[in-house]
Length: 257
Length: 218
Image (cartoon, rainbow over all chains, first blue to last red; front, side, top):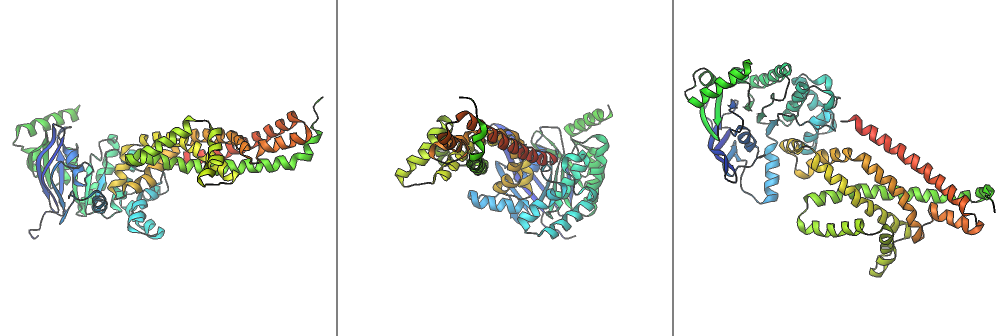
């Protein structure tokens, strides 16, 4: 491997709502194909950081870069909208509550953006939808509506929808937190498959076991700062920081209940 | 002087033609009020103040004054500033805009009620705000308010009788014409009422079909 530039590069990210600082000067570099998990207690700013990467929650300071393009650059409103819509096509995002479009069936959920933004024909878009659904094991549900699917199935479709734009990086915002325990595994399997295909992924999660088995690097965030970061073996087995130890101990205890 | 319905068949063609005009006005105004309602709702929620304020004045005019006066204003008043609309068009425009304002209120509430995650998900795949509204948010909002919009459309059908005062020979005016010739008000008003009832039934059937189709996709 060459010493390439970071693929996703967050430089001195700051975010505040009035006097409340949610992100305090966070920098994070993610290489191509790398899988990074962000863990931490609720309110630590991990979701905010993730949502800053595609500018859903704009930063109040600092820069976000994807390859050699600055995501949050300063532009007049109209130009900025054009720029960000283009950039977002390269950044797939999966939400805790799926956010599938309930008025569209599975096929239309996936083909909507490729048809509108990439000008695919109906046939091309259908082929694309079938490919992506096959990948997440949901091909036979292509004509179903979201309301007819289980949570795990919805999330797999949401992943297929994001993948259909052929993103360069995937962001997962607690993708399994809203699922019944028995449905978590099917979504985790899809994410593992993406990992094997060397998709660059940034994952906000509460699933420590999953983070340990899939991720290259783990960030522990608390109160708007990265407290500790390193390979999962170190963060989960031998954390140095007291706060990290405390968080993991509490988390482990609550999971055993 | 007893009731005598035997004169009715002679004027059935007049009444029937009037009913067709009523249907035409209602359908035209309903379509205008639906799309106008969406348009006004989007302006009210997203347009800059400079565009929003004139719309508010317009809304006040249509919600705060009698529909009859609005029809007079559009048909007789606008001529003075060079807008000479045929009575049918003036009727459709008046009824359509009047109910567009009411539909807009419903649609605005529904747009705001659509889960924020829908807009976010649409934006993250790269859709612009306008595209997201058009393809994701507004279709969901409209689905949510189809039953109350349907109620407005029934009210629109009934209020279409007001268009008779600007000289559109719709159902009510047709009945009046027949009465003028026969001096049989009771008979012809009852026949007109019957026609309104039948049109009403047809409209409810159409609305139910739309609702059913929409319910399937939830």
